[in-house]
Image 1 (cartoon, rainbow, N blue to C red):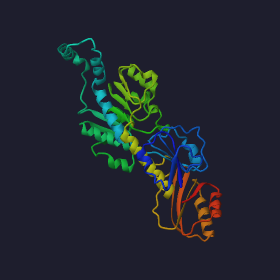
Image 2 (cartoon, rainbow, N blue to C red):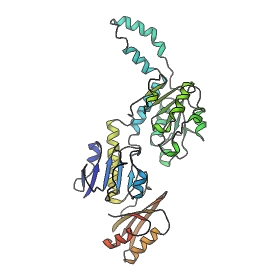
Image 3 (cartoon, helix red, strand yellow):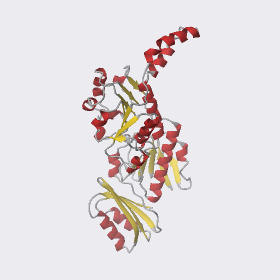
Image 4 (cartoon, one colour):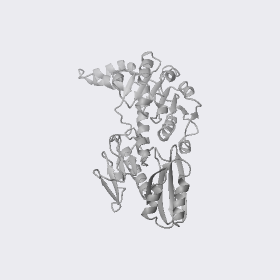
Length: 389
């Protein structure tokens, strides 16, 4: 029986994926096989010796000390793309708010509380509406920085609105490339994209390489009056440099899902309360995807959408399955195979994958390895964790 410890309010659509004759789901297990969470911060949570996997129902994993889990051989999953449509729709609203003075216009209407006669209000609004004029998105150029699960569908959405779209992503995956319309013009550098776009939208992960990707130097490459949308992560934009560009009118506006105190009260800034993935559908999709990934891993050793382990899959061909992770150094796999050979256990199939400093292996053998064989494999120099499925 697998034990899954949950944090936060996980959608029942995800929890219902777990067969109750194989899984126990609760928030109080002392020795769980897996964690399932949304925004719970795990930096101060002790890692149980039984833990094999962590699944976050969402894309970002800033709330998880990934390096610590990697050292313990714990696979960390996220759910890229599960909330993509929700974010895409919010980006669409951000583009519309950025192009026309909708927000100030609505606030102005709500301020007319002293007018009680409809005709008087209508005449006043007819006179004042020019204050809130804007421009159309049709024919403007959108620059999409990051063409992954969200960036690709944002780019396609903008094409449907009649915009020209340029994109930049030096590490675009094959899957993302398939999703992307051929009408999106690929840029060879970030600076090239920034110099062409009327609107720039960010869709890159928050990693060290993207911290302050939009800094003072990048902002100097923007077209005069261009507007920046950030529905990715706060730290991708250097706030100090952003404010300077807004003050100097080098940037036409900033629309973001990440409010900070120094940005409040500015007319050229529109801020939302981090609601990019806050739809019932997105929460359900993320929970279902996280649950499915946990079950595939716990039952078959399959790894999909891990942020710290390589994608690994091998069809079942009978026999018994063991998996192990190890430091990505020579001879570890050979030593493990030697132990199995010395025990006269025939290897039916195997797959070995690596990612950075970690390697992961799935091995199907004819006979069920005895406990002393598993212990011997665990004792091999470089082996981090072993599971018999």
